Amino acid sequence: MLVPLIALVGLLAPPDAAAQTRRDRAAAEALVERMQAAETRYREAVVRIGNADPEGQAQSDAALEDMEDVITACARQRGCSLATMLTSYKRLLKAQADAEGPVDGTELADPVPADPMAAEPDHSVIAQGAAADVPEAARAAALLADEGHDFDRMVQYNPAVQEAIRRWLTDMRSALMTSHENYQHMRHLMWPHYQRAELPEALLFGIMAKESNGRVHSTSRAGAAGPMQFMYATGKRFGLGEDGTGFDTRYDAFAAAEASVAYLNERLRELDGSIEMSLAAYNGGEGRARRIHRASGGKDFWDESVYRQFPPETRDYVPMVIAAAWLYLHPKQYGLEFPQVDPRPASITLEQPSSIYQLTICLGNGGTRDGFMRVLRNLNPRYDADDVIAAGTPLDATRRIAGLYDRWCTRGPRAELARTLVNSDPGAAVVRAGSTAPANAAKATATAAAAPRQHRVRRGETLSSIARRFQCSAGDLAENNAIKPPRYPIRQGQVLSLKGCENQATP
Image (cartoon, rainbow, N blue to C red; front, side, top):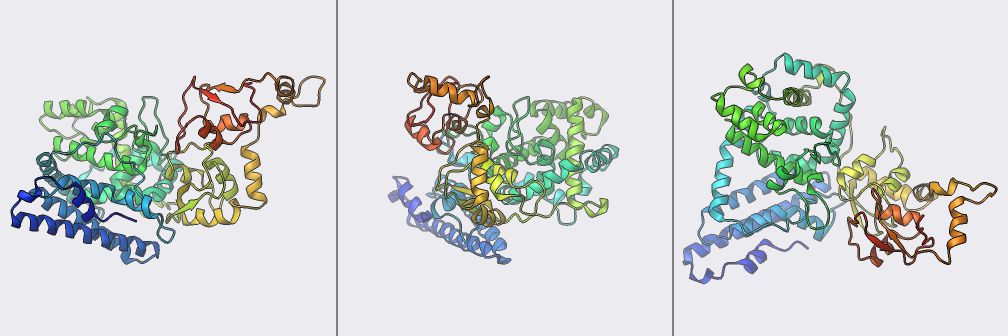
């Protein structure tokens, strides 16, 4: 059950609370009560959203806005624990998902784990930063708000953007459609960050479409990773990176969207609110964009003296993002029909050990063209597609997937077929000359007595692939080698005990 925020504040209250004036104490307590009331409204909204109540989203948004108002007031109020308020607010969605589980099959979870490197923030710095963010966000919202399509008046609709639109509508149409479909399934994780910052949804979609096509595991040759393609060092500056379990949160849609909002607001402050220059910084490096902006006296991105100083990749990137955002707002104008999906979030709890590959097979297409592997991978970025996930593990999904799982993946011939296919060993197809027995089976029989009981991890291997090779449970293999879930991290060269495996010989 979600721990009441008032209890958290009570536990973490500063030791000098008794010395505060009665008026300050009363004001601080009132803010705590307001935060608790907003939390209660938010939880009620989640239930309404789960019941398909159209008022649920509005109530949820209002509750989150109230929390933001409380945080702003807390920054000005003596004796108010701003650190506690901020921590509670940031982790509210995750705490609800972890402690309560899905509400009526719906889960608006923050899958981002608590940042182990997070330190007690300085109140004055936070207050100053929060206040500084407001003008830039408000300015961007006024210029780029989706309602009325002010985005159209902000960015320049010029031949470069027109050419980019042509590319999205021709040879890149499939990528645009895929991006939109992927985004719809992740929208509940990404859009709230932009919405609260009053940044346009079209901008979020444009960046994501150009960066990754909405594939959370996308990684560039340069090392950029995740749906918003953060480089490691930049991501670390904005709270992304290793979380202590072996997982890189750059691959997490919720965390990546949150970081991109922080990054864009920082660039907007430096670059006089220019979306084009901020996008150029996103792609070509903030240092370069900053130097060009200052040297040019703040000229527009399309000014020749500015435009020519950016590399060709950036000159291509900026209009491509704008074009994708434009098409997101104006699909009918171009005869564009984005794929219709049912993205309503839900959760499934595995009744037996499975991998995303196995689930993809047993779920079938379900009326879609490509099935559900990408959806499952995007919503559960901690797992590789071939990881064997333990029974009892909850996975984020959609209502459609949840229904198909109960029908096809828990029992019956399709479930058995999926299990057989993912556990098949290609090596068993190779037969030694003059024998009808598989070569690896004969080798295992001949050497079983002297077979080693250990395996040294090779490049590219995962725990699940090793478990399949040696015919043992990935869960048992992990337990016998003290490998922790849910990521089950292993490294090249690591020596694993094969205790309990039927075939203990290293091929």
